Image: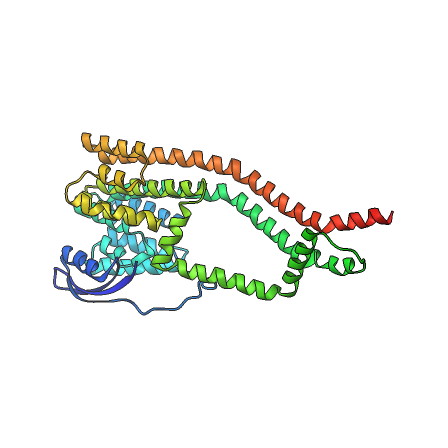
Length: 402
């Protein structure tokens, strides 16, 4: 979503500038006016061209942010004022980028801006869910409690993310090593046989001729082929950062066998947990649903869920609108329906998230069980096929000479 630099008039008469992220300028204007601000102007920040593969985006890691929130909640519980807590924690950050962001938040808080608005003004450096969680805590007078809810949510999401990354690391390393081996064979080893076979006045088998010709093409045009591959990856990376590109790529991710379902379940777990956090903090259904939709890291699912907001605003049940998306399992929908009927929707959303996490664990075990041997067998067949295509004529020639 685009980021806008907003010049605003606060209800107390002060004038301030904030960076906000929104779907459109009109939607952002309505949101700011609802919060009581008078909008003097909104302009997108100057665009900066970045090389998608060569530039490194500065960011705050999830672990750093989790530790910060845990420390902030501890200091507030100990009775330390909010501004003093922010000043103390900002000076302790080892990440200079995070330290700079917290210093900006501290400066805004000391001028009378709420903590939620200060973090929201940092754009996509911090999750929108976090700012709305803080706002719910400020309105209810239980900021510590909402920080506890958010840290619990973040801890569970980080644990699930680490589990997924850890399970897929070994298969990814196997694939990289296998690809490297194939590239080595095609660019260095196999081309050396070309001159050797030219010494014999014999017709080589078709598979051998194909492999040798491809290997010679790799050997003589390696830089060109590498440049084409780099350009394709560069273009896909750049395209994936556009709104349409990310939506299309995220839709493709959901179609992969097994891995697509794993991506789907993780996004649903994000959605149900964030919605449960918002509703448990006393936020109304519609803004809580909007925040939960924006917290989903899959753009395609986020777009499907955001279509439920107008229907919920008109009074339809959340479970019914989600069921019509055909993106939520029937058991999860049934659990939400029970929560709506009993008035315990936040608790049922938490149970739904636990159910989805169990599904993620099952899928992870299935992925690890199936993917590792599948990669080994597939790459073994590829490498064996290449070597057999090259060495079979040699064995044939040796047999004839004998």
